[in-house]
Length: 72
Image (cartoon, rainbow, N blue to C red; front, side):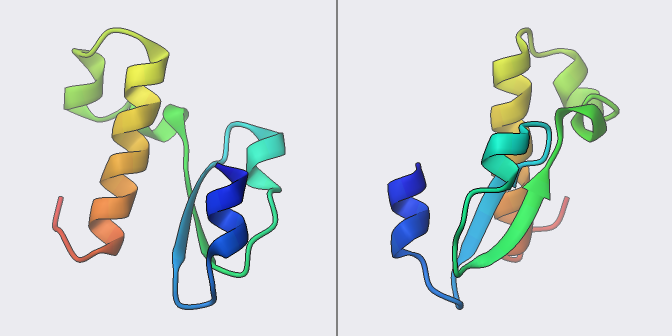
């Protein structure tokens, strides 16, 4: 994942996990947007999907989709 960030430029978007201090600090020239499992758990869909890893994947995908112009 760090290799992807290494190739990003200022017009790109880096979607990073705010709950992981190491990941949140990864260097990139891209615009940085952060997702968090704690904010996702408040959403209805995430409560029905088992496993924190699945919830974090939903959070990252939702953030990327919103940044690309999708509505909630």
